[in-house]
Image (spheres, rainbow, N blue to C red):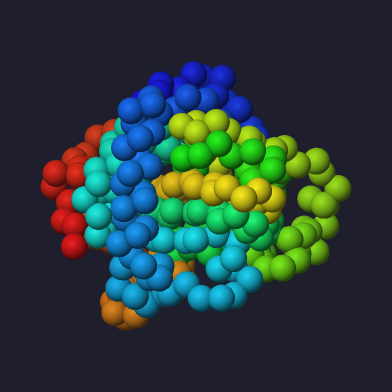
Length: 277
């Protein structure tokens, strides 16, 4: 795994809001990621979350991608991959924070002829608000202009707010109704070979094209929360039981839900110490 970051990559990430890392995984690691993701997704059937509280259906959104969330919680292979402290350190170094927690992982798989992923922001959906929220996106198949690679609008993370966002719907440019100035900016495609990855800021405008091919485009992602982040009142992936125990401003530090996978100065969770259901 190519985990060493250059200062140029860190500076580029902070300025543009994203960075692409070629050849992130070795061929052997890529094979392991593919096997674990395929197994974990198949095990879930139609359950987006392990508890079945979210299920896939026949909506436009469900034809954007096959989405399975927090696979680390109920698949041992995914737990090993997602709780790797090397990933946490990369995210911490890019974001400039001391510690990183998993908010949620996601398998995002575009089937043949899948719908495009409309322009959106990540962090405004989540139960915490941080300009240092960050996600990794790992290409398990070649992500191309034809099958739905990511697109970014550089620098938008600097002017985004948590009050304005849109859902991933049929009008892929709805975000630009809310941020008209962004609609005048150029987007940057990020095609990647299988085994490469990108990191992007949780407030960066991004989307993905339609899959215009008869092949599959698999990706494994994880959204990260800086350690010390607090509850903002939104439920997102949290259960109703968890919400009942929280009030706005509470620190989100439940390792069973959001494990601390890296910290510069205090102990963190590893695959060996975490519980998998």
